[in-house]
Length: 384
Image 1 (cartoon, helix red, strand yellow):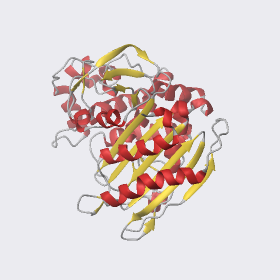
Image 2 (cartoon, helix red, strand yellow):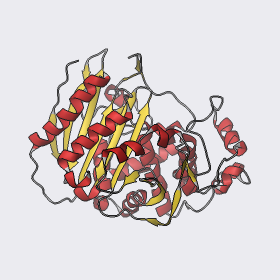
Image 3 (cartoon, helix red, strand yellow):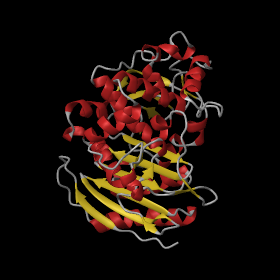
Image 4 (cartoon, rainbow, N blue to C red):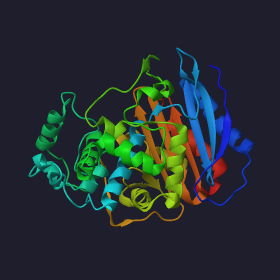
């Protein structure tokens, strides 16, 4: 596979101080990490974006469609998978900031069908941090409709007390997103596309890709290298439903690095997603983002993104009170669908962030290793 990279530099509107960075240094750091990764994992295409001190650099590799040989650009739409959860969390924090949603309330307040059930013992915050008491990674196969989903939650039985165990869960963040939308008095997709994306300045991000944008929508490739796109499922929009571009996602990262350019309700929402709520080993779980204390080592990052963290229950310690991130905190989130793989990593105090979007679900460890290698070149104080 022929791999080419194109670096495009654009100035952000966010109020960072100017910082001279040689674009060739960035390009070399990214090329050295990404080109071998793509070759080793047979990845058809990737869009990589790096922000340094408010300036964005874009590197585009390979193709968005093998059939039509469409090259990847900074505006190519990729399925974010679970990176979507960071946007769901931001919407929840926005609703809380407006006084519409309370993280201390229980889902039954917003969904009366759940009042008195076991899930109603958990708080909205615990749903958003996967600590409701053992909700699984996925819904059972037989849960397909909204009515079946509500029945599943009503009949669910926990295996731990709320707030004592983290078990990564699409149903958990899915219910968090659903009660957020109900609190806002609208549908979830309408809230994200109509309120969240415009407030964040995201102009090419969707849950429902419109016909006019379908030409930018990449094809993903499964394990058999067959073209695929995400299929509908319960809580798909809330848990893994966003399609976005490197251009939009690096703007989202810039807004997380310095929310000062956002209007007050959204500025507070972004800050809210950075608050640490639970500790699981060396990982600090907030709403959406996972945090690590700097300087972070590669083994710690790999452990925080391991199958043990994503596929098993882990003891969780509630942070009382919830903690604003100390200086040097590093944030990340992985995501995948059957045909796509994504990773976002940023160090706010170093003003450096990385977005990696691919149209293949390649191993998470490879993503983390590559992003860590780039971060080590560009923000050596954030890693060890």
